[in-house]
Image (cartoon, rainbow, N blue to C red; front, side):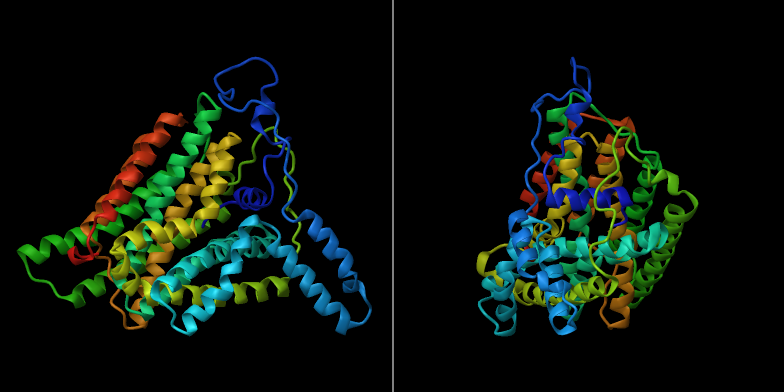
Length: 449
């Protein structure tokens, strides 16, 4: 995800702590009510303890040998302390208990439904770990290089899924999942944020300096993505076209969009950084400014997590056909709804927490940036990789998916220019997303992904 350092810090805090009293927006209104006063929950919030706080202290005493002068003692002890420190950053990492089952389920070819369930449950904590490791790496590289690495590495989960899906020739399933990511991050992300924030505040303002730039970018990216589908629909009925022509068109479009993405990163990280890195007024310096992992530890952890991600995606993709046939649920529903929810679980939770603390501008910027990351980077790079792997990944999507994508983009275009939000807009976004989910649930794979 293309997100600024502010959101990356908020993401780590949201995973590891609850409301922080000094940052809670309810404390900004000590007397009287105004239009930004909370509607619900005006009381003080006691910050809950850090996950596994006492256990981490105990572990520090047990492995005090990490300070030993003997390397044979110091290195293993230090590695264990670092590993547990990384795992203990979030309660969601408890779901890693399913990982030992997901790996043999894939290697030993267990029941397809079992593979799918264990694979999905394991992806959630691995996605969270990817965010944490990416954040650690970006802290050691400075703002510009760190932002660039964060933009690239933050798509590790989606790109690893795409490569596995391409290797299994699950093109339709991959296309549905990528567009589902965009719809999930926009409609569901904004809907949850507007609703939960609106229940605490009468009205919230969106004071994002980059809002118009991001809105225009997502409109261009969406239009570029759906035009080949419309072209294919028209030409296939009123003219002649070949698959080779669509492959060449898709490859050319992917290269153009990747070029736009590079220019967008240059715009964000070099020439107009002030638009994307605005600090919240009245907020003290944030935590998590110092890296806790060494460079080699972070890189090694990233390699291990990517390896585990590939195994889990292998479990999901290889079992999706038999599992959906057994449960009578279409691949379209799993790809368009279920997989995006799993991958974006941590980000959705973070955006809700930020909305409850009246940081809606940061939520909107991050939501649009996540959609741009899929349309301008992940989808084009997988198109190029598909051409290299001799897989025909084309910019030809199902018409239902295109309509859902256009509906999500149109909803953003109508809601965001007002620069104000209430819970009603959030309810409307959630209602539209629920309608899309119900439609996909009734969708049949025989109709074509």
